[in-house]
Length: 335
Image (cartoon, rainbow, N blue to C red; front, top):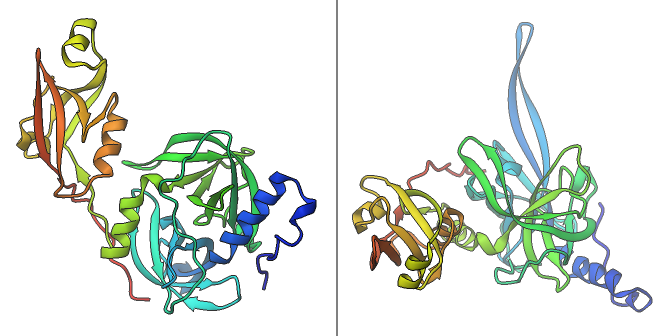
């Protein structure tokens, strides 16, 4: 059984600052990384026989709580009948699925016990282009592999299925391969800022991680409730640059022009109309649907939020009560 190296500190004086940063990140977070093995069953026909053949899958996960909560990707455990988690000290556990959120490609697992090594998400840690990052995972079966690189870009968006896209992704050139999925992306302060999720096949140095700063509500809901309620506003629109007279009138230069309001949606119930311009939400200026959607998604179902609206030549304030979007949810299986 491969295990992550330890005791880097005693060797670090001979290394440069870059090497020391990578080693310290691996030393602190490495013990919280788990190797996930999934078993599913695929029915196939072979002549006169029907085979129910077991299919194995592999991935990574991160213990985010000492009571055995493991964060990973939804695609790592999708369709699994059984999930086993192997810790860095060699202990092996059968994991229970707590809940999933396909919209963010996240899943939460639980193993029985307490006092496990863990690395909590650094929700408020800054992520800047060019900063050092370290990925830890189990690519292609090579357990507890450490790779390093930089943040290549932030706020990337990728379409992963019909009506499903991952947004606010961190792009990195740290090597990410199949099996890394679900492992942590760590900064030079040994803080977990992302969960690696995918790479571009055939490319070199183009991998992606889910920015934990954008999914705090998702993780907390999975841990507390086992499912995610997803608030929505119920409008379509696009960013708008205000002209000089409008800008002077409302004290803003940009906003979101409302093109359509969904009937019986929170926006409709609050009195938002087509051709309104949303200047800010929850006190934060907005200049695109992406920014507005991010504010809504980080709010809670049932929360009352205030929107600054420009309607014609008048600036008004509307209160919206957010509702659940009502997306279909997968029921966890009792492994």
